[in-house]
Length: 137
Ligand SMILES: *[C@@H]1O[C@H](CO)[C@@H](O)[C@H](O)[C@H]1NC(C)=O
Ligand SMILES: *[C@@H]1O[C@H](CO)[C@@H](O)[C@H](O)[C@H]1NC(C)=O
Picture 1: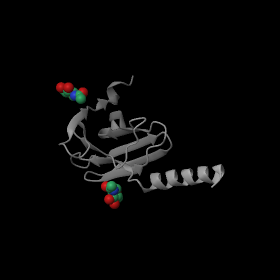
Picture 2 (picture 1 turned 90 degrees about the vertical axis):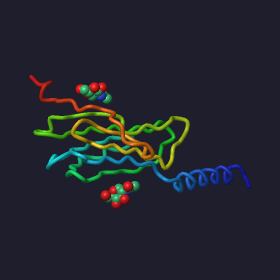
Picture 3 (picture 1 turned 180 degrees about the horizontal axis):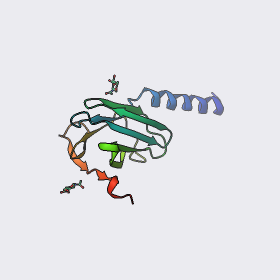
Picture 4 (picture 1 turned 180 degrees about the vertical axis):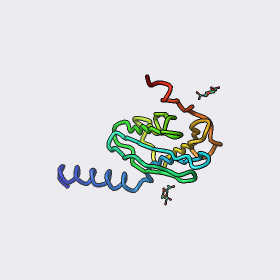
């Protein structure tokens, strides 16, 4: 086997391997009360995932592979009257050199804040809502 075909084979193995690994998933749940709609907008290094509206009880999730570079996903959530409660946070971050796979990040939007768990532990309050109507003017 010459060098070039050896190199091509290596790339093929790498690509095949990375495609076979389970993806990482971010889940966002609307656990708000009444008819409180949750607006979600997430952006990763690679994609603007667009704006999504969730009714209470609904879930939004998306899956991705860690890239060779640091993978980051930032999400913005809004809820309440005129979507006045807001929070922006890092919903996912790769370990850098260590490539994660099959990692699950669960975020729960509740009335008193945003809760987080990787799935094993009970969700823990991670962020409070900011009332952006108080910031204007
Ligand atoms: C993500 O959401 C879809 C549609 O709601 C659902 O069918 C799927 O099972 C979810 N995936 C995971 C990994 O929870
Ligand atoms: C959220 O707010 C409560 C009270 O307003 C405070 O005690 C708590 O430390 C805050 N939590 C976070 C994660 O900022």
